Amino acid sequence: MRHVLAALAVISTLVAAMPAAQAHGGGCRKSSPPGECCHMNRKTGQVHCHR
Image (cartoon, rainbow, N blue to C red; front, side, top):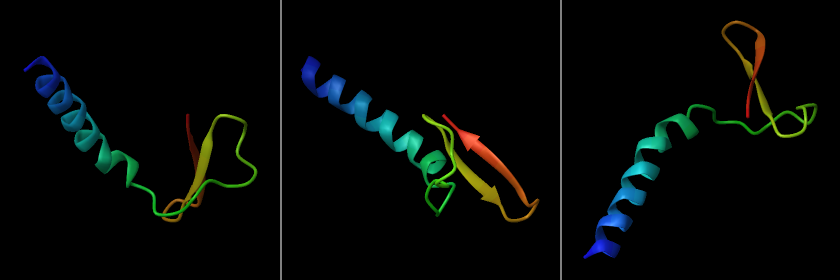
């Protein structure tokens, strides 16, 4: 029973994180610093990065 509850907790955490992961359709810029993923915000024309 503990394994089922642990699996459900992991699955619910992954599902909750999906919208944040899907916020950007493109990949990382090649010029992104090591360990970060930078994207261009087309509306503002500014680059922002994620760790």
